[in-house]
Image 1 (cartoon, rainbow, N blue to C red):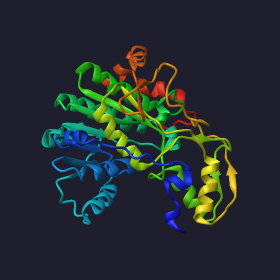
Image 2 (cartoon, rainbow, N blue to C red):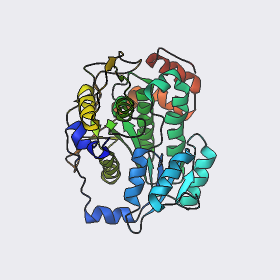
Image 3 (tube, rainbow, N blue to C red):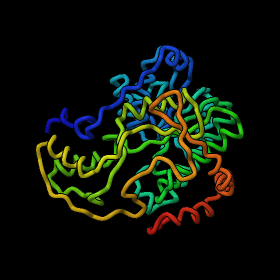
Image 4 (tube, helix red, strand yellow):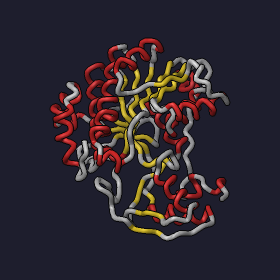
Length: 348
């Protein structure tokens, strides 16, 4: 297999739009102390790699997955000894650890890329989604406010717009809670929402490549299913742009038109040079055949960057004050009741 044939442009048929940072924006970033959660993931590690090239900027890469941090360490310095002061194990479910981390590092900006993101797993175990995606985010943003961290970017997903799944609903709750802290503190706390990140870890692209290379049937849930796609670099750069712009409650990226997954499969088979059968399995519990970027309550507005719009969550906040209270009080029982509306298969 020729790996060079598997790239964003050849498989999606789209160009990866490069993000231009002005000298002023780079200069402003150079003065920041940036803490990144989920730094071992695809987006988190791309953000760290970008930040590591900015003179003067200090960063701290955190993740609860030591294997992911090991890989990131190799990328950054060709070693994996965990003796770098720039890499730290951190669990979002541990407020004591978060408090110590923020107190010791004194960040001026936090980019929150840590989350559980596998739709089917979270459909079966919504409590896990609540503990990490909701309470983990709440731990992080509350302690950030406590220590007067001025900037906070929560990485979200298009599945949070009119959610039909546990993943989408918990990411929506995280957006709402970050927005609530933005209103309470007047700090620059925001979220950014985008679709599928091409060939990120655990993505559908990774699954298709494995199935094609191992000559096993490709599992496609619906023949007409479509998804928005962006490159890892686009996701990382536009997340940083959102931190700089801070235009509103949620930033939404222009990813062009959604792409049929059947076309993605066809292009991957051609690039790899192998063909295998396709099995249509039916949509999974909580899965949509197509995603949307904005809910019916949201009105997109332009930012200074033509590739980024923003929306206000004021209507969502007004309608969901009870949910904010549940999160603030870590009311697991009531949140599990709310989330049960989004799943048919429930373990805990």
